[in-house]
Length: 273
Picture 1 (cartoon, rainbow, N blue to C red):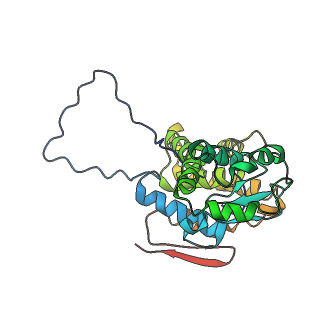
Picture 2: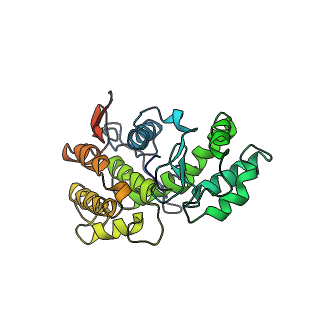
């Protein structure tokens, strides 16, 4: 997905494995409790992530109010819609409507599948206008469509970001930085895709999994993200990094613990503790 409005995730947290047959000694009674922080897939942290993305994509913390959002923001990706900015020109909107139709044949959006296949890869509205936006909003009142949006967000954006972040040894904030990057840039083959943003960062610093310092690496990743955003006029306002993610990083809030205060596009937001 890609767009300034707003990824999604099907069950897919990184599983922790143990060596087969390895017995574990019980912890002594005096052992201190674990202080390891929850990852972004912890329900409370995921809720924060959804609000942070919604603040940038929809200027609102009420991400659940965005299922019916739809407009063309003139970024070359056609219609942008829903909780994570599914786009008619990038394939993820098509995947979403296909999933919805598989689960609920004959839904109000099913008739647009041929048009969505035709406009994929372009900014065209051919076959969608004049009633697609009205029908999208109608579908958004259906709990089955809401669940489909959640599931596609997780499958395409959220779960891959968390999995990659955990593999790199970065915490909740870093996993969110990955997620927000995939939401905006997707993970295709172009030089501004998430994977190539990460590769650019790796030329400057190593992640903890490779023996690097987490704060140093995340600054390098955010630098690479800003560079990628500036390659497109529609994304050249980098405040979702500069006055949000970078603020948390400068405070070394690697667990993304509330209270959180940030700005996006000049608007101030707050999540209480």
